[in-house]
Length: 249
Ligand SMILES: NC(=O)c1ccc[n+]([C@@H]2O[C@H](COP(=O)([O-])OP(=O)(O)OC[C@H]3O[C@@H](n4cnc5c(N)ncnc54)[C@H](O)[C@@H]3O)[C@@H](O)[C@H]2O)c1
Picture 1 (cartoon, protein in one colour):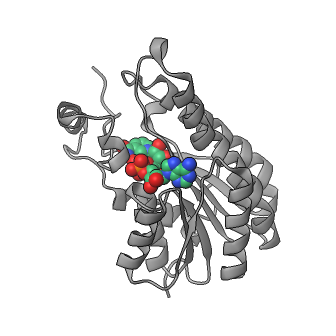
Picture 2: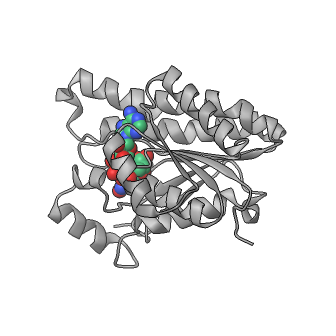
């Protein structure tokens, strides 16, 4: 028996990067997975390439509260309920705060923070109806260390950690576990847009395992946190960074 047999999951930002790896890993473990993304062509390509009939695509902007509700409700109808929500969608942009453009900051907050609010609002009643479930929010090791030019991004991820604790407390009585994953630097289209070759090299050098985590390794942790093996784990932020934040000076 696979670890997520009989489960229904909804993953945001699932067309590429870490979200894609999580959606595919959950489907391989037996879940019916709703793959939501604003990039519809890439989403369709990802689902077609997977060859898996248990992946359902939803073209959806998580910043649009109504669109989120429609997509999650549609997936609940398709899957017969909802057990797992993965809040993964993000907009990457680095720049010094003093000159940071207002429209980009607003867009990042709309997607990376308010988008999580809307997904939680839409999904929680379905998880309660199921008698429990698992919510995973994507945080970052950027919360625990200062990264040059990442003030807006890290502020959003810091809020995600606080929200994870808050929701773990509020939803625990319903049997819903809420955890966060804090990846180290993982080569993805989004991370590549803000990290150059020298940045990747220095991150690899700082990691005690002398390599970087892959999107598939983040997905393995998401499967674990969603499975029965993690039934007593809630309110935690789990670092997966190949030891990049272990050492001091
Ligand atoms: N890659 C890393 O190094 C790293 C490190 C720490 C944390 N994370 C976190 O992991 C998560 C995934 O990161 P990634 O590197 O795979 O990002 P990515 O930019 O490569 O992929 C993000 C996906 O989200 C989608 N998306 C963007 N805006 C959206 C919207 N409004 N509605 C729906 N979908 C939208 C994009 O189309 C894309 O498919 C993020 O929450 C990120 O903060 C990543």
